[in-house]
Length: 221
Image (cartoon, rainbow, N blue to C red; front, side):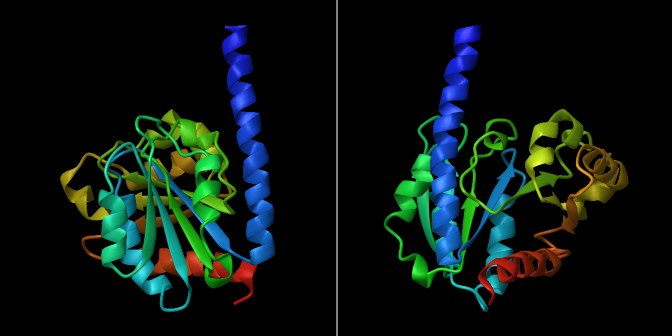
């Protein structure tokens, strides 16, 4: 057991060294980086399909997609006119800083304002792996259960925004919006909350404007 813990700590330490290197690079180049995290099927990509067209009116954006297999999500992002690169992890349940650094090394950061990282669908491992981002936004959907925040508190603690998605389905589900938000606030009182629906468009512009504000604070645009 001790050996297993030591190996994990070594991996995380190596990841943090690279993440810190990325943070310095992003700071020097004035690139804002946001890491989208969630469990599978919460609607991260669908939210990006709605949010990115708003953001790209004011910012130059690049998206890094993470999935176990396929380029499906990167292709969806490209269809809305935003450049994207797919990282296929071949079974790994999270992205690592080294993989992000490899992608970034081929980019002209002087021509990018915002990098969006859509992590692999998983609320456990991605909470431990810093990718050099400025902040994490965690997405939880109403179809997952209102107790998700207290089942996965580590992800709530490292996130800056909590996006409660698919609110249009609440009338058809046994889901208490207020209780879910209270659970999340109980874990991390500094979370910013957004209620969204990609079907009706509710909350999408508010979330996009929040990202824009955070980006402007860093890049001074």
